[in-house]
Image 1 (cartoon, rainbow, N blue to C red):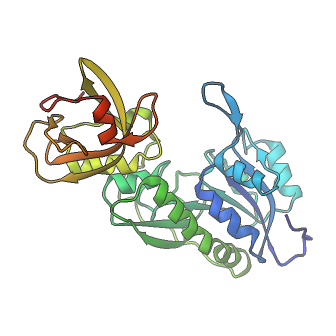
Image 2 (cartoon, rainbow, N blue to C red):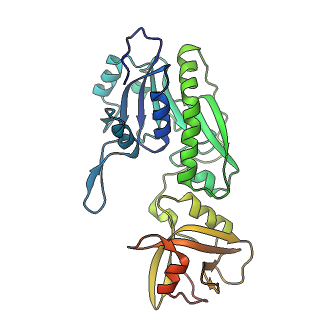
Image 3 (cartoon, rainbow, N blue to C red):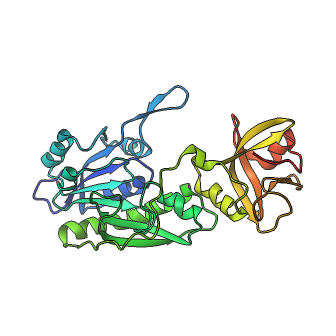
Length: 323
């Protein structure tokens, strides 16, 4: 990281992030002459896989690959971390998809506050999973909000919002990457305006939707009584995790599949969850209204494959009802 003195005109920023949303923002800040990154923090490494290998967060891994030091922080509210920020003369604490609650002492420490980049147009979709929620609910647009943090859950006043149209076929993973890039294009300007030009934040209007809860594995279970459009949105919203899934009957045995690519129709001729006749290129399932056509899937313990390849080795009889 570049060296700077306390009298430097650069904005002294400590950056907290854990998810993919922070990656493009980090790259942008490293190339911005107006900003001095005096530190980077992320969640602690977690055990991953069957062998429980300790693995850094995706954000920390990206920073480490660039040769940067990354603090792995069990808690950001300790006296030790607050002292670290004071010693580094941090002016703004930047928080992007970090995953820990910041308490009042920390929120009050930086002279220009704690700035959060939130992946929705607040006050819509306060909470942990706003990108998934926007896709799941069929929104036409979303965006990023640059907000001064307060003790509430995404309730702080807003510095700036930038909108982005949602493509009708993109997944959460794809939309997250585009939102990260959008935030990266504006983050330097926002930090500079807040710390050097006196940009004021505007209080949020009342929330227009409930807070979005953290996603669980069970959320991916497909309720076939829903419309085909809603289930198609689930397929997109729950990628890359937990993925929309169901169980299909194959020769008297139930096999669990995760759906990675699908299309839908408003027309149907069957009961919810019923397997419909098809040309063998897709697995057609009747929904509460409409039909879902499954084109690609992941059987348990297998790699991703086309529905045609799956059906060749796993005949699913038309008329069967999915769990």
